[in-house]
Image (cartoon, rainbow, N blue to C red; front, side, top):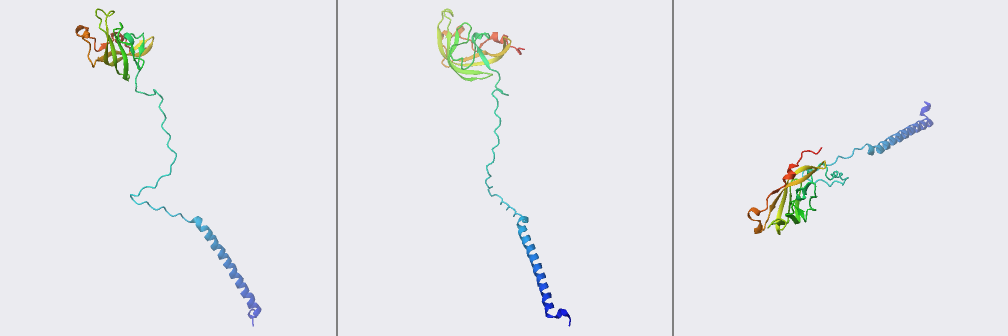
Length: 213
């Protein structure tokens, strides 16, 4: 009879088989645990559900607001045009006025026979100025020095701006004044004594220039 068939041999062989099976089981258990621990990292995130057509979009989180546009510098690339003045008495070398300075006592004529008072200017741009107030007119009867001043309501429009070189510098002046007297004029200003309307400044127009360089 072979020695391996003896009882001690059978016990030893079974022991080795049991130990081998236990080792294999331990290895399999370790591999299984490793796969289980690695599976969450390797898992793919579920795809986002498609939003049904016509459904309202979810509110977006507030983000950083877009920076405001840069402020424009005053006068930069402006289409406002030049500043235009009223030359008192028609003299470009005398007092030059513009709203609101031309409110009271703005002499229109060089002989002080017409002046604007209590003026409210509704516009004063580069092409036209308009305002309402009172005009004081001298009827020059019997002459302008001894005449009577009449205060009449007036609407005034200043127009026809021209550029004039004053001491080598360019300056703009109105060359025409147009009037509307809503309440009319006194009888003293009828016929040949009626004031000119519009009233032009030929001396200013004669000095107009294209350039002062």
